[in-house]
Length: 592
Image (cartoon, rainbow, N blue to C red):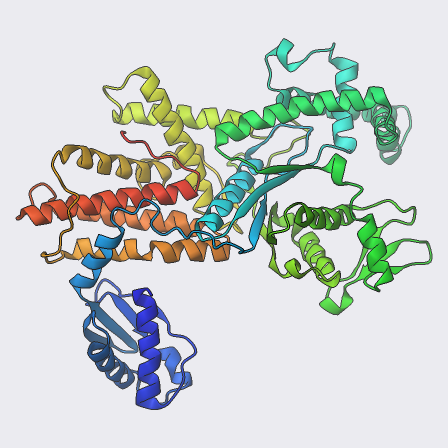
């Protein structure tokens, strides 16, 4: 039981004994720096069940805690806030338990517990991954790692949108203008090559629209009758009919894209346990619709189309099968969710990492699955996130103005290199060592800048700002970790033994309090699906460590015990930084 849990239970016991009232919960927070104390009990919420003066209630509860909780040594009350002082012994005993624990804060999954599936990335095969995909991938990967650390088995997956008119547009343009070029013949990654032809299609399409308008067609007619669009529509029809030549070209060009995606995922440091392809899943769900019709979940209109009535839930009627019997996106999403649980029967819930423009879609999907009677539907979550904007404005795929993910990863390493050279951070390194550190800093800067923001908020991404070595940035945290490693290398004596007989400095106690919070931080981040909680906790820990480093002498400590303890404390902080950054998919360099 943690100290917070012990205090919560004892506060409830105090209220029961002193006032014969029952508290449902106890609000605790860290004591503000201007007051003496370590943990603060907020008295005001108790007034709902206890009548009286909040200061007097605080005094009574404080006295009870000092008498009944071993490590509460004293207290003070400021208005409706009961500030508790915790003994040094408690924090030193806690530290002795965790200082050598490599996976401190992580919970091992219990046999038989339900697993979670996290879906992220889910790109289209007509273009390379871009900055928006980067936020998606970083969020999905980090949430999966955090949930895993919180004590659940996790499956990472994606569904690749590899069918439809979008890929046919790239295929037509490649046939017309490609001269049989390949990734090998051009030296381009496959996703970039295919993406170039998507842009080329759009350019040709717009040119043909202009020609048709000049010839007397209306804009609406021209858009529908442009020859290149008609060719793409015909190609889609042939693909759906299974014509061998078209299917072979489709497979070839999609495989180019898959290979390109894998290179980007590797560079970005994300991975997957399984892949679903829309070309395999687009027919799923029809059987489930028929079953739902029989059970009264869906209803059929006069034209033969099938709908789900969600008006009781404040939504509208939702189409799930067209009148000609063809599926809509909702149909295949229903079928894919059910198929995933069939493939992994231990799944107890799913998390979909998809932009906030799809909020309504997922609200409907989850309600339909609930109506169909799937127990796991109550554990479905849409990890909805805001878009990533650039100082120059929005990105547009068709016009080729997106920020390419590969280019951005390279640019981040170059930016890190330029700033590091200016600051003289890596003097004495070989060029190979420097380039590796630049990659680590650049990618860490990118990931941290994106993940420190609450997922629901839009981001204005500035590469140069993200690589700043000061402030709430990845490089600032990485540099602190490297500084700690330098301290540990300098300590060329035995500093592993447990230290007990010391009095803690205020800066030391502050670090111990933050370290004690780490397991709870992981659980909160998992519950809220928010890597930002981990990111900002790490920044707080690093700020506290730098304050400690500047104000408390490590190697010049008054006693050997104090010196050893401060080195141990530095090591534990470093390990926690590495652990927390690992959950975010960020590496930490040993030297900087």
